[in-house]
Image (cartoon, rainbow, N blue to C red):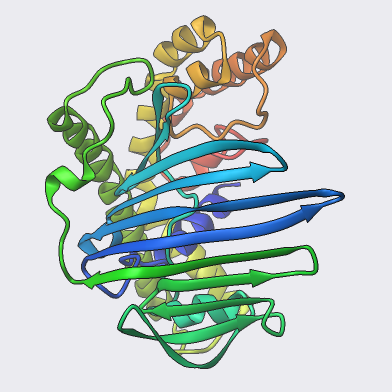
Length: 347
């Protein structure tokens, strides 16, 4: 229903966009080692890792080179991940290519801030602070998980030492060089000369693409912030005291206030979404894979991770049903009339 969509917007808007780390920049070098027994086979890994961070984590590069031994067999593993804002680049050296992922929400090197601090995130992950230490001349706080099975020495969200141990495995990552608030150069973030999603780009072209994605995310955040401000105004209008939960009657007042205030913007967005459906249908009809389908609309939330004729037909039918709603939406004069345009689905 519409009220569900509004609630989602408001709750998301309450989440403020924070920087990832408490330091502006860093350059780190690590040694890595691990030993693991799998049945009668012993797996040993040794190598190095470098980490570059700038703009409080907006830019982050993690490169690892590891030599793995399994019995008499030995092979080299080389990985690199570069994050720029909400875009991630995963370098696949053996495949000779780079994958570019927009709206990246995956793993980052350090402990991201939650509620204004990385300590909150560690506590949520059930870590316990047990003391202090120093790694490569840099003081850090020791955090332990599950009675010491995992230990991390962390400085402002950045792990300078990680150690994990079980009955069959021991893993250790230790910083050997730590430069805090020493920004990397632009060249330090340069990617290997490999095709990105099958195409060649200059660094300037990539920065322009990333900037466009960041602008999209920024506009999205601004919209969420406006919704959060509107919710605060609705609470005041309904007479809800600070820190108190609204009564059923106040909840109705809040919902009506929100719906009336958001109606013009909501109607405009619904009309715009339906008007682009013909182009979407044309694109989806040509898509031969999930990756191609995602390129038609990067904001789409697909119900299935498969892509075949069955999934394509189901999606096209959904789009056709929404396309037929356009005349009704254009005539609507308030949110109640908007609701009548799609009684059995969300907007």
